Amino acid sequence: MTIVPVRRALLSVSDKSGLVELGRALSARGVELVSTGGTARALRDAGLAVMDISELTGFPEMMDGRVKTLHPKVHGGLLAVRDNPDHAAAMAEHAIGAIDLVVVNLYPFEATVAKGADRDEVIENIDIGGPSMVRSAAKNHAYVTILTDAGDYPAFLAELEANAGGTTYDFRRRMAAKAYSATAAYDAMISQWFLTVDQGQTFPETLAITGKLAQTLRYGENPHQSAALYVPNGPRSSGIAQGEQVQGKELSYNNYNDADAALELVAEFKGQAPAVVIVKHANPCGVAQGSSLLEAWQGALECDSVSAFGGIVAVNVPLDGPTAEAICQIFTEVVVAPAADEAARAAFARKKNLRLLITGDLPDPRRAGLTVKPITGGLLVQTRDNGAITEADLKVVTERQPTAQELKDCLFAWTVARHVKSNAIVYAKDGITAGIGAGQMNRRDSSRIAAVKAAEAAQTYGWAQSRTVGSAVASDAFFPFADGLLAAAEAGATAVIQPGGSMRDAEVIAAANEAGLAMVFTGMRHFRH
Image (cartoon, rainbow, N blue to C red; front, side, top):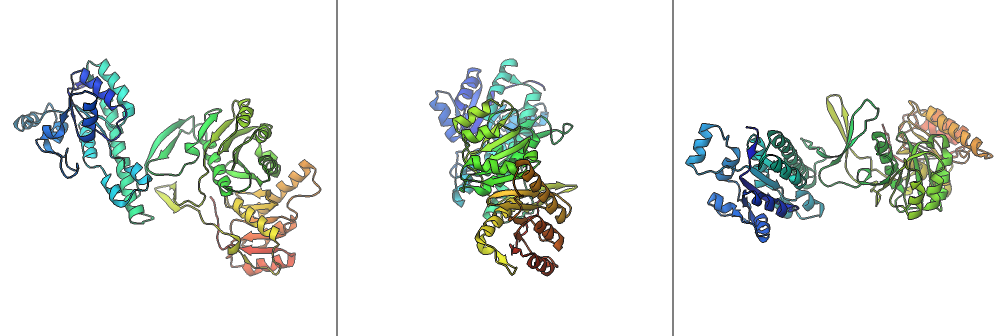
């Protein structure tokens, strides 16, 4: 059967958006309305005739509404194969009427968890009857239309209008697929809440991950790849995916990836002095703090002005006009900020292709969570790298103690290094990155590349010497040999921060002492691949 007329509808919704309008449209077509609890009251309050579910089943709603639709007269009316003689005979024998339309959205489990409800309230907001009706109607989509999203009401009414009060098989099939996605996501949220929140499991036996399509992108990492943006179902932190795009072209896959890297790093400076991060290909190429955002921008840009061209910029405080004007002096793909004043917006408005993303509050860099990486035949899952160190955690391992300024520079360089692809080396001085070496197969080459970039910056800006002179250098993992440390010393670094833990720590410490360096161990590694 292709077109099925809608003669009886069962409505039971938690989100009553558009309910009355839908009910009126159905009633105007002579559709019998059957409903439950608050949904029935809302329809009656709008002056519509409604049959209570208890009248249909012959049983009252009971147990605080827990039992109302779990009945053969409901599910028989949903699951019966209409042109099957045995099914038709069973319906006639037991006075089961067909139900042609089910309109259900489920108890607000996600919202209940998000508001911090206690365990009893969370459990009470696990819907049982709703998913059962959804699944029954969706299974029998050859005859029954299922609506689980109020956003589909207009399309459904248009379908009725185009088909003399009926729905087509293609429409019912689309709605059935959407319904099963809805129940799958709902059950996944519940299962993960039980396993992770209620029972404290980090890696449950079954990991259910679901997301909702937010945007189909023009292409993926490369033009021959397809891509889309999904947002997780269930409670989540806000970030790039929730940002408001004020202007500019549609964000690409690479834009999202780089903007996320920039936001994650600039969030490390939440609540601190103005900070600017410039990212290219998911690696920072310049980071600085200053007394003003404009000063921080200049410092970040000077670290590697070549790589900054076509980069992503993120700031930790509301963007102002003078900084926006300065950013506009070079080609920039995306700017990410918690807010932007009118002068900043006006400056960017003259660059129609530049994307401005407003995120509101910055994410918590220490938040918990999991990261997931697909591999051939499986998923690698780990807890987020949210470990942190303070000055009190540092262990001085050299004869020379670091000065107060060197310690400050060490911690700044360390903060940046954890966001650089391994092997990562970061030189920093006075709250500004002097040189960044990323993604090399050995640590010595990363040290050298960072020093070369710093030397190029000095030449570009006419400085008397490279900013690596008198700087602190951070390494995301231990120096396995002294060569990487000695390369840093040759560049003029005077202090080193690294995790320690190498079999050759003694050799590296001895080399540091011989070079007159101060070196501290963190005891924590920050590989990033």
